[in-house]
Length: 360
Image 1 (cartoon, rainbow, N blue to C red):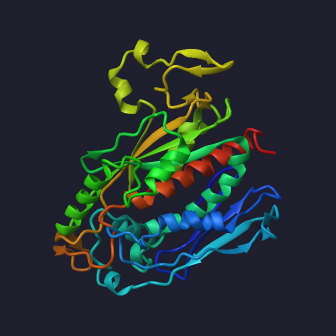
Image 2 (cartoon, rainbow, N blue to C red):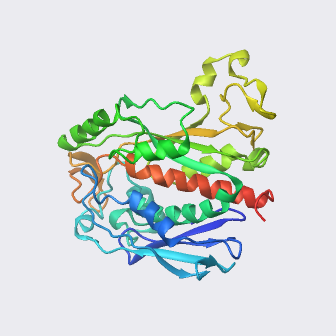
């Protein structure tokens, strides 16, 4: 499982195996590798301290196995992992022949056979995003010198929407989002979002939402045309994150209801720099960065594992049946996925920066 051309990320491990992590290639020798910085992003992904998250208690302590000496990249492959410590296979053994609705169990069994390890989702689990977070934090070390800053936040949960001004600086977005459990910078929307998650959990159900990502300071011209456009490469990476079911850039789907005179972003001069008066294009034209903020939103489906009875098929008996998923699961994955979408965006931008010669 690998992504990237110049900044290459390979994921390894399984949800209930000994470890999960990533091998990152293409990091220039001498790049500072701040273990504390990586750990802080891993901590943002963890459920510990979240009242409304899974009760699986993983420490997720970063281990840098190779590719780093005295806090700097050696130029070789960088390997890092965290251990899986709070593993319980029992609840999944009883589901081996009854695929869980909303999960990859059925197509994975057909593809890989009945002996495939799908405990906790196996290689299809959100647990695999640990490696993405590690790689994203390292990519940030390549982007910061360019002045690039990426921030993500919870835009909606269920029917509750956040109001976040376009003018809000990334640092302020991050600061405000850290003040509540759901990861939104809108303090007025946060309690209603938390209530929506609590209501779903109380009903033995789950709820989804949307995450918005903003990337500022992008050098004009970064990206590639057509197949490796910024939109295409970001979408590729974002859809690798379990539970993501949709993405839109800038005005997105609402652009289908606009005229060209409304959607086109007029070019203007601001303090000698070419800018656009609006940003319906989401900072991208022809697959290349315009210099305006790159803005996109991703739709995250409700968590598939719910405590309510669901219909399925017993593959061994060849008969329909009903199951109830037990174990420890998030009633809403959105808040913990915020840092993951930040991370995959950094991975893509770092790869494009290396390909385009923006990073030596």
